[in-house]
Length: 289
View 1 (cartoon, one colour):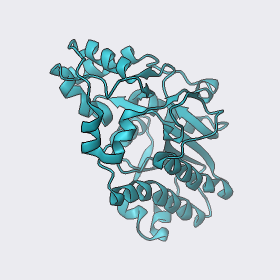
View 2: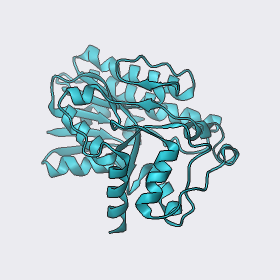
View 3: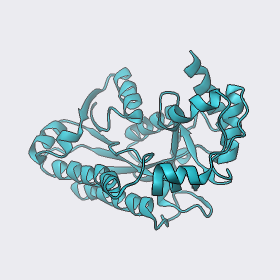
């Protein structure tokens, strides 16, 4: 297949590009310049692509100034709209659009599956709603649309683990705040496998949660990581320090969603890492090699 990918140089994107290349697919990376440039040129890049995977988005683990919040939104919503507009210019359009979203669509009150309607009313809740709506516009063009709401992605070379693994190795890790907040997660290998699975299963469409079957608390995550690196994990990260460093963005770390995937297993997908101890053991062992 000829596959176009936005966010190809990011944490998830690089793993996905490697997986697609291994199975013989031709990857067309689409960068920020193309997404913010002329729609006709973007359409030329998409021409001949059977699949478009939309992973673009500015990191959220930074201080949320008003200007950066605009960048977070634009990097997701405006880029997705640009993709759909470019598709509309084509006579032969891609058959499938797989577009990322986040579990921030939900509040932290209880456990949610795909059967539940998004209910978060904060910044990330509105972001997810608008992001998904932008992608779903492609359905009117006859494109199969799959929305994948990612849980926290765990892998040795990027994302959250790249930040937390070094202090945990020195015995300086621990839970965030009181540690009672939900922590829904997925191993990077399972995330990539889920995207490839969805691209192959033509009967799949709509919203899917990409989250391991066993969400934990932040405290349980810290304990499991401490055990994996054989170090104590008892030093909590005080909430005021996070607020000082990240401002409003600290809310993402001090609260969390309990989200599970029902539709992926129903489609025949099996998680390779269903438990947090399995995932962290693999990540720590490969990071040591």
